[in-house]
Image (spheres, rainbow, N blue to C red):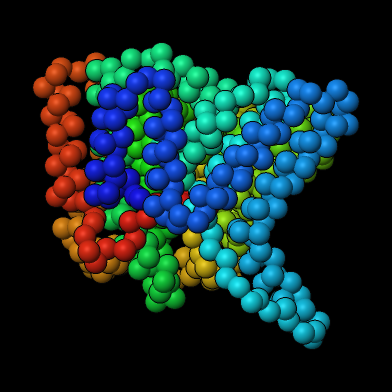
Length: 494
C-alpha cells in the first residue's frame, strides 16, 4: 500500500476514525492490527517474518535483565544479532554472495553453483530489523528498561507510518510515546493540521518532482551511451534530485501521518544539499540511519578516539556497510566507500586548506565562500550518486567517461534537453517545482523551521492558500495513472 495511492487515502482516515471511537486502552491494539494489515497488503506471508523479528527481540529484551554474568548477556545479544543478520543475509544479500562466488569460480574454471529457488525481498526488512536490533542493544547497555507488554512492543516494531521506509526510530523515543498513547488526547487541532500539511508537502515533492524527474533520469541512464555531457549531467543532477525528493517525501508523509495520530517521529532530512562538507552531509542525510551506524557501529569500533589509521579504518567499515545496507550490489558498496574516501581526504587535507586560506586571506565566513563549499560538496555527492544509480560499476565508469569527454555545450541551446523524456511544458513544471522546493529548504536552512513551523507564522489566508495550491499541484501536475509504473518509493527496496 503506497502513501500516494487511493488505498491509503481510504485506509488512513478509517484508522484515525476508529482510534477516536475505540476506548483509549485499546488504541494501541487497533494501531497494531492496522500496522500488520498495512504490511500484509504487500505480501501477507512476510508478516510471519515481521512477527519472528518481533518475538526474537522481545524475548531477548526480557532475558537480558536476568542475565547476571556478562558472558551470558553478551551471548544473548550476539545470538539475537546473528539471527537478525542471518535473516537479512538470506533475503537481501544471498544473491550478491552467490553471484560473486560464481564469478570467482568462473575465473578459476570451476563448476558454478546453481539456485533452485527464488527469494523475494520483503519490503522494509532493513528498516525494522535495524530498529529492533537497536532496541536490544539499548536494553543491553542499560539505557532502556525492557518493554514487558508484547503487543505494545510489536507496535513499536511495526508502526505503519515508518515501517517500510523509516525513519528508523529509537526505542527511547517511540516506545515512550506508545506507553502514553492511551493518556493523550487524540486529534489535537495543531497536530492534525500540522500532520496533514506535512503529508501534502511530502506528496508534492514525491509526485510532482521525484516522479517527474525520474522520467528524465531513466531515459538518460538506460541509454547513456547515446548522449553527451549535457544530457549525462542532466541525468546525474536529476537523480540527485529524484532520490532526495523520493525519500524525503516518504519520510515527511510518515512523520505527518504519525503526528495526526499523536506520535512524534524524528526528522530524517535536514537540507542535506546545503551541506558544506561530506561529513555535514551525512549529519543531514538519512539522519536516522547515519546516527544508527554512528551509535551502534562506528563508536563501538573505536570511533575517532583512537589512532588516525584506526579511525580511518572505522570510517571505511562504517561507510562500506552503510552502502551495503542500501543495496545488495557492488555499486552501492562503491557509493559508500566513495563517501568514506571523501571524508578521509577532507580530514587529511584540512591543515593544508587552512594554511592556504590564511595565505590567500580568504574570508571563510563570507557568503561567497560558503556558497563555494556548498556547490563543491554537492558536486562530490552527485558524482557518487552516479555509482548508486548505475546498473554496474562498469556502467558507472563508462557514464563518467562520457560525461567528461563527450562535450556538447550546444545541446544547451538546440532544444535537446527537451528530448530526454520531458517535453518543454513538463520540463518547465519541473523547474518551477524545484524552485518551490529550493525556497522551502532555504527557509529551513536559514530559519531552522520546517514547512509547518514556517506556515504557522503566516497569516491564515497564506497558510490555507499554500496548502490548497500544493494540493491542486498534486492533482493537476502529479505523475500518476494506470500507465505509470514507477511510483514506488526508491527506499522500499532497502
